[in-house]
Each structure stands twice: as C-alpha cells, then as structure tokens.
Image (cartoon, rainbow, N blue to C red; front, side, top):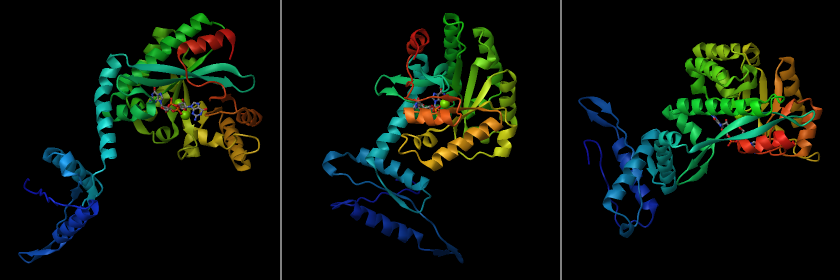
Length: 354
Ligand code: C2E
Ligand code: MG
Ligand code: MG
C-alpha cells in the first residue's frame, strides 16, 4: 500500500482467530534476523487485524478500520498485532467529535453551571456552594465534567472555559450577596492544573474580584491533590500570588493522591476536602469501618494541626454526617444535604432554609 505498508486479505475466515494466526505468522517471518553486508539486522512490524463479513462492509471501510487498528498496535509498543474493536473505535470517534464541538459549545452557551451546597456540620447552616460545570450537548444531552474537562485540558480550551466559569461564579456570588447581604457565602470554583500554569490567572482573578465587588476571602479555588503536589516553580509562585490576593485555596479530593506532608505545610492552602472514598466507610453506624473512622479522624486532626479547615465530600447519609460531626469535621457536601442544582435552588435555600 505504501513504502512499508502491506495488506493481507484472508478470505473465508472462520473467525478472527484465523486472521490473528496469519498476523502472528507474518510478525514471526518479519522478525527473523537477516544478514546484510556482514551485519545482523532485525526488523519488526505491527499488524492491525479486522474481521468483517464481506457483505456488510466495503473495501474502503475495511481499509480504514485496518489503519486505525494498526495505529493501536503501534501505540501499544509495536512488534505486535491488535484486533479491531468497534466499541473502542466508537468511543474514540465520540471523543474526537466532542473535542471538536467544545469550542463552539462555549460560544453557543451550551455550558451551564450548577451549585452544590457546602454545609457547616455544627448547625447545618449553608456556608458556601461549589460551582460545577455541565454541558447541554445538542446530540448527546447533558454531559458531566468528567466527560469533557480532560478534553478541554488537552486542547487548551480549559483557559477560556475556566475563565467563563470563574466570571459566572463571581457574578452569581455578587447577586447572592446583594439579595442576602447578611449571609456570607463562599463560592468554591474548581481550577485545573493548566489554569494555574498560566500566571495571567492572578490578574484575571483580581479583575474579577474588583468588577464583582466580591470580598477575596469569599472566593475559594479548588485544586486537586495530585495537581497541587506536582506544583513547583512558576505555578507555585502563581498559587502564592493568588493566596496573597486573599483568595482561599482548597485541596480537592484529598487522600486520593500522594501528599508529601512536609511540602503540604509550606503551601498556601486553607482547606482540605476529604475525598468521597474515605467517607463511604462511614455510611451506616453498623457498617462503619473502625479503621476508616480512625483514618478520617486522623486526617481531620492533621488538617486542624496545620491550621486548615476540613470539608468532607460525598456525604450521603445521616450516619456519615453524624460521625463526621463527632470527629470535628467543619463542613460537608453531598446528597445528604443537596445535590448540585441551578442557582434558583440556592436562592430558595437562602430564603426558606435547607
Ligand atoms: P469534585 O470537585 O470533587 O466535585 C464533586 C463531585 O462529586 C461532583 O461531580 C458532584 O456532583 C459529586 N457529588 C456531590 N455530592 C455527592 C455525593 O453525595 N455522592 C457522590 N457519589 N457524588 C457526589 P461532578 O459535578 O460530576 O464533577 C466531577 C469533577 O469535575 C469535580 O470533582 C471537579 O474536579 C471537576 N469539575 C467540575 N466543574 C469544574 C470546572 O468548572 N472546572 C474544572 N477544572 N473542573 C471541574
Ligand atoms: Mg471540587
Ligand atoms: Mg472533590
């Protein structure tokens, strides 16, 4: 097909095994060392295997699938065969299409925000909200951040997307402050590692605070544990500059990564958000795993020793809320209190209570 590309058509294949057998033979044949001008030379090949009923496919489709599969074999480390997997192919296409439609989504207003209450455990007062982005996709319906934030990171779109989220969040916070002046809500926004890599975020946040009139300590930025632990050099300066603005910094999903505690001490961080898996061990009093309880208790004491407040994520039952309250945890978030919802739901909470 090309200088170094060949096609083997195996007719009357009983199943994929027959074609795979041919691929194995071909790989072995190519792999055999050959002597050239007194040197021993080994070469390797990669094979993409596609099995398809002749009646239901065209040569062009078959060749395209083979090419895709060849690419998989190469990506897996070469000198091997890979078998075409229609589901994997469909997933990759969806990923590609999502990634291509993301820039337009932002312009067309397909992205929107939901707010999830953060509740003080002592008295179950609403003290803040976490800002969670969603995408109402015209074809695929509602998409959650785990389905597109990674793509936005890869393509660089996270910069405008993150800026849009921050801007909307600050405006919404300002509107709540105007409507409920005696309630001091904290608005907590997730920021991804790539956003903190760009020092421009410091001026952007300062401008947003000035424009919205929001007190800096009412804005919290959440950065995941793995991202914050990998922060050094320029991004670390950015983090310090953000903290110097008076903005709160929270470590999100704490306990899912590997924290260097000596390093953690030196970071400008104000809050630890304990990851859901720790909290799930406290689901019901009967189920409560004593080890989980001890770990959570230790983490809460550790955070308090470091002068940090603690928020528990994924609190779904009263037993969990109760256990966390007894362990001295400050704030909680989860379906036990409320799932993420549109801004109106927070207005209602502020008006009528939770
Ligand atoms: P996260 O910051 O840890 O957010 C908490 C996630 O847990 C949310 O999922 C929330 O809906 C879910 N959750 C809340 N309460 C419960 C509960 O009681 N039980 C369980 N099982 N889950 C609960 P969501 O909205 O799908 O967000 C997933 C992740 O996407 C977030 O994790 C955050 O890391 C990221 N993310 C969301 N919005 C943004 C954004 O604007 N920018 C960036 N960079 N990341 C975002
Ligand atoms: Mg978060
Ligand atoms: Mg989290």
